[in-house]
Amino acid sequence: MDSLTLPLDYTAIERILPHRYPFLLVDRITELEPDKRIVGIKNVTLNERYLSHQPGASPALPPTILTEAVAQVGAILILSKPENREKLIFFMGIERVRYRHPVCPGDVVEIEARVRRLRSRMGQLDGFARVGGRTVVSGTMTFALGPASTSNV
Image (tube, rainbow, N blue to C red; front, side, top):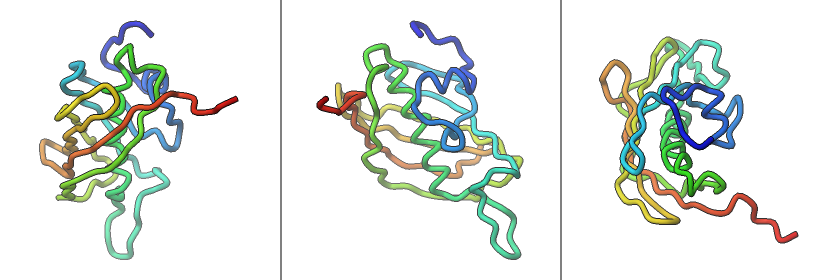
């Protein structure tokens, strides 16, 4: 995978991220500016196993799942760089996270991650998720890069 052609579909995303169904939460990547920003899409459907169903309320995507989707889009930005393709990315934390509105089945979530700080083995990304142009979550994610294999065999 020497060059990336946008949009990246689910199969192309699987070649970048180690996640697989049902833990791969990104359906498509529509924009990618190396070392700057990325935009991805998550389509929320009624048959998603992790939708929260509370009595008297519409089913909604749990904020933790939405946060993971934002982190995965950011990980694609970092792991798409040729020098990082054989590495693993570790989610180290999230700060200033704000959940503003619920995300429901039928929503198309546009997820954007922008580089705040980028070093060879660590960095920070500002992440945003929007539905219909309205921000539903935002926060700053910290990550670290490590070798793909940590075994001493």
